[in-house]
Image (cartoon, rainbow, N blue to C red; front, side):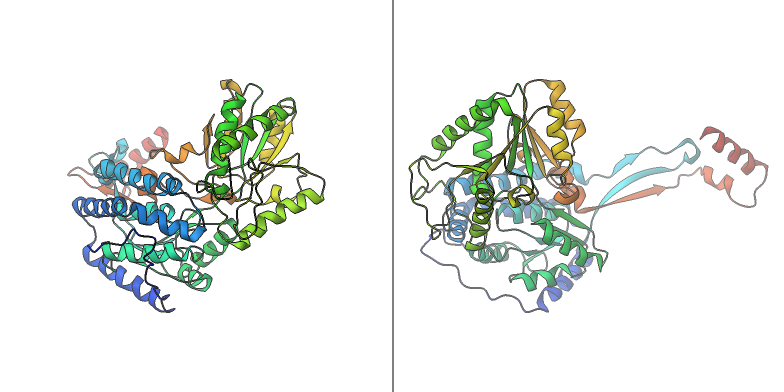
Length: 487
């Protein structure tokens, strides 16, 4: 395998976007290869995972460099923590459990079917299409790709055009590891992405916004292609009366400001008792200063991905200010942050009206609305009046109050007295519900997503069902009477 330079001074070669017909040709190539070699062995799948693991470790620094160049500024450590390490951990987990996941699972048969036996066979679906996003352009491309390979599939990847250098890197990186009839990358803009979603894949996996997710699902429906949609939404943080505010402030600040809030499960807004609001604001402000004592030239503080998204978040703040909301800008070094840097200071928006754009749309930036409630039931009602979120965060000591919130709200996943951490538990399924997504992956859930669960019945030497076939005599009538009585 030839190497990919880790030097930021060596630009990757420009790769021209594929012509419109080429994704369809790649799909046909991969489908032929799948039919020729299906099913792949455990050994072949483990070899693919090991190839991907070794290459990811080898090129970790290059991955951090190309992602930083797309964002304008993104911390090397942040990329290693949020992109490279989760990929390596997911591969390690898959390698450890893959043999067990692949095993046929015996299931019991009812008394009237005795003599026969049954099992569930996990089969690869075929060719999987993956449309990955810009906010974590390596992790959110490679983890689903790795999982699809673990399940025995072939993969076509369409990475985001908003991170062009990372997308070019992914194309070159993967082409060095796998033949195009196993893994291939399709580059291009929205038109290519739209055409990609219309291809007759055996499964289509999309990570991105709810609005685009609707379009992807509509396109997939034309081919009856099953879809997994990993979307987003407004993930609430609920602080109970007995919440430890120092813990909450530390966790919410770090979770919110990771990648400058450009995270699908970032804390989107805070609900807390009114009597504790000002104390939380003070503690949160201290945490921001501890995490990011400066912003402008701080390599640890990420820029907004592009001018369009920078201006979108600025419009949210301008509207909130125009409508009388109290804004608290947290700029510890009191630096002038220009639009050219695309760095936004962390900003609290206190008691915003519910009709503001920042209370209706996913923020995807370093802005945190704070709203107070009178009782936990009010907080639950506030959450339930809105589309179901991808994540929910609860801070509190009392188990009864915690369990009440968990029972009465529906979300993709939950972390208690912490933010983001549930996504790192490989044995927990990760996915949304309703407007925040459809289906799940990670660990065994991901293997199941990219597999067809085939039920198999095998007749034994003695076959009870033959006694209930025509012509219906006294034996079949007696058996039918018994079956109905037993049911």
